[in-house]
Image 1 (cartoon, helix red, strand yellow):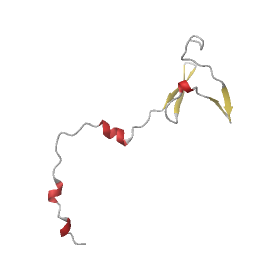
Image 2: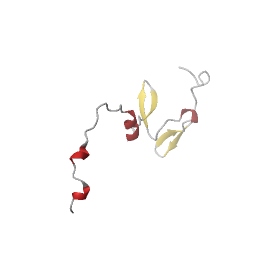
Image 3: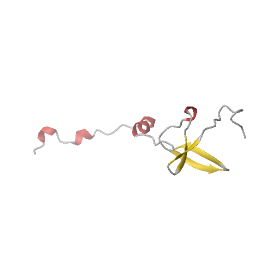
Image 4: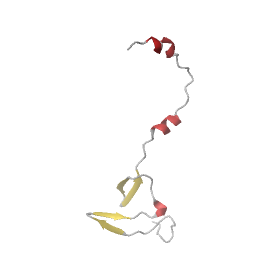
Length: 86
């Protein structure tokens, strides 16, 4: 297992208590995106991963391919607004 002295991607941090929970401060070099993380144990290690972010509507729409077919002219079948009586 690489040690903090031989691996520049490894940092030693202090653990502290936050109420009944154990916590740690994440060094700036390891900051994760978002406000939530997933935590699980794997082979005696604690793995912390960012929660995958849901794509916003604008990013989903931006990723859509343009349609090749033309839309029908639906306005031709509508009554003119001047003829509508309220």
